[in-house]
Length: 176
Image 1 (cartoon, rainbow, N blue to C red):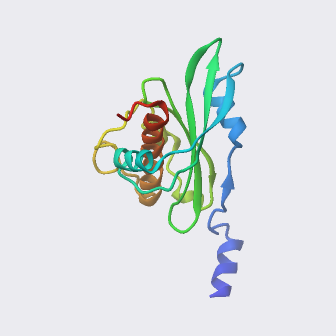
Image 2: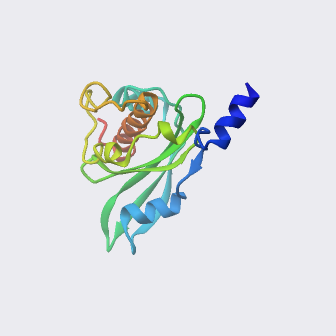
């Protein structure tokens, strides 16, 4: 077994290592652009607000308090951003989900992915989530295409997007 692993490493076929792609600050600047004013906020959700977010997201999460970032430029709201870390298969991935003023996905940035990078969905798949609002069909197998070889990643990233969109509705008071 060890000989096979060493042979695979020598041949350059070892599994890809975990990666950190960007910091939170780099991603926020890339999404909202230079000159955007970014303000970190914390929302202490009540049990009812957590339940409301879970119902909207249709996924489990424990999210109180919720830290998110509000981006503005010249007194105009650009959007809000939420970080989500969840287990993909056995290791975590962290994504930043930016939401626009219409409660739609503005951008999806992968900050860290600790599974083999072979399981990371391609950028073109991530970009297909941009512009999406929160609907019951926002999930792989419905309105979101699956990713061959990255099914668990597609599910985890879609759940992160659903969670961010649900939390956005709750923290802005649009969940009523």
